[in-house]
Length: 125
Image 1 (cartoon, rainbow, N blue to C red):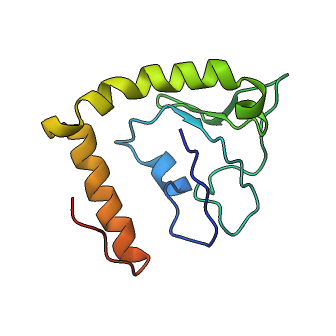
Image 2: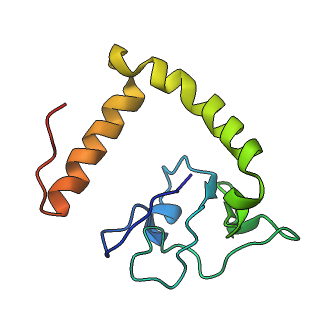
């Protein structure tokens, strides 16, 4: 789920080549930012948002399909539901923060990687 507010162009988090990679595990992409067409779009893998009538669109077919949810007003229309769902999903990872969980180790590596691309030193852990 992408919900990053970006104010200047940066290397994309996900590319069309990533979606075509045979080893890809991603099957659903939910983009809350919906920055389609913006130079600050961190997910330049689709060209139009979805809506409430058709909330999901298939980006890749075949054995490894990828579906997109990109409803521009999703967070504002269902704030309680989305906050509860997000909190329920995030809570176990927050509780494992001090346990050197693989999720946080990967997040820290990605943070350092992208910080170096942006020319800013990453703070120590």
